[in-house]
Length: 619
Image 1 (tube, rainbow, N blue to C red):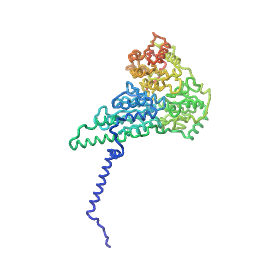
Image 2: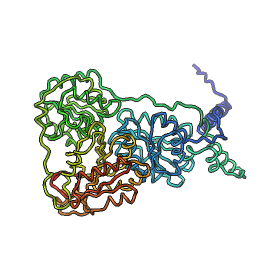
Image 3: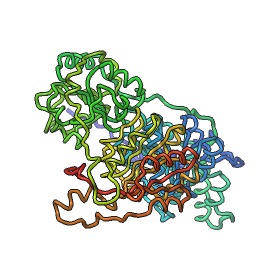
Image 4: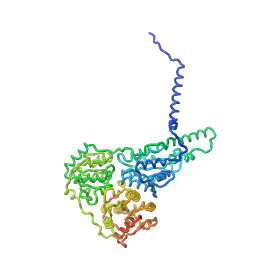
């Protein structure tokens, strides 16, 4: 039987190959045209006569999101942003160091519940902010950092201050983006704003190359040769540059939505809330520990306070939750936290994690039922595989407390942990003033509208025991990162947000070195704050353990520097407190009056050393 085989004509292969090659070539050309923006340019106008610039788009988005302050240190890369913000009524506040600008934005975010914004120039301007951005990340503060950059064509070509900024900030920020065309400014910033506030809040970074910020005619002058090109290669290069310029500005000024996008905030399910109620309803010795995250929006502080009072459970307050219940609330316990946690049969941890502040969970009793509420699941379960186990882990925001209702109230259990504060005020010191006594007097004269900013080690650690916040969101510390140098930036942001409040900054003398130059900023911008510098001529927090453990005070010594005179040299008011002038209340009242008259004030308090904090660790 024969099999018939149809043989294809030998010449048919070439047309098929030619068709495939042509198709591939056409696809490649279309892809190149798309990448070069040719199709977009066909449908969207390039307004070559416009004097508008990308900084105006940035300012418009910030204004639409309710941003009132922009903190900065000026640089040519970002000048259009600053000028546009000024025109739209956003107050531009320039600092003497970029890290201060971000710390100030952090304070605004914490106190207002909105996004704090800072803008800094490229390269070293951005690298100077790394510590503050990391602090915001750990403190869960929604901060938007705007960074200048070399032009889009000159990146990776050795331009001035050009580095890989995106690689630097990706590990620090929830959202990172580099804007490559003017038309992308608005949608990118809106996306950054919503990312900063959704889920677990944190810092975001948007890089704005210089050629997307300046007007067309300036960018054209810098990018495209003025003389007509000669030769094929030169013409091709010129065409490429002109096309790149057109793609930068195509559709740049078309109207786009500028307002806020909806936020995504995790919420507890009704089933989880009911299980929490059942656990707490059977408790005899319950405790609540509230951390900073519990004060995040959309939970207003006054509603959270009402919820805590309705629960009727004694509580410890930490971080931004300090002051939530005022000064002398019967449910607020200030001492013996570790012992109380060991005795409690149910512990509700809201907005706090089991890190070093709770000894990684070791302060919790194995027999206690633990309820933990946190927006971040990873942080919520930190160290749960080693030292503790949650009975109920709720990924959600602080509104879960509103849903628990009245669960428990027992005066004897709360009262059993009210011990007297350690009394060291009358103990004589080797020289100068007793810091415990000074801080007790500070506590007595602070008005109810005070916002406390703390920046330091030993002096601030003592103050944490003795000086009480007057209300919610009136205590600003760096948070879990333990960063020195936050003081001036936090004070700047706090006073701008709450102009009617007295802002008192408690500094250690070591930490004050970071903030001293910013009193120039306070003077120039008429920001009256009071700085109390606990000056014991050393890094005492470190030397307390370094000397007895290792037998040396190396690198821990400072001097009884005249910080008050340095502040006066910057235009601020300076006062001195020492043993020779032991009129603490009189001098503090004088500082208050000068602050009310519109002057920033530094009170240099020469203090001796006590054993109040012996045994405190600094690692």
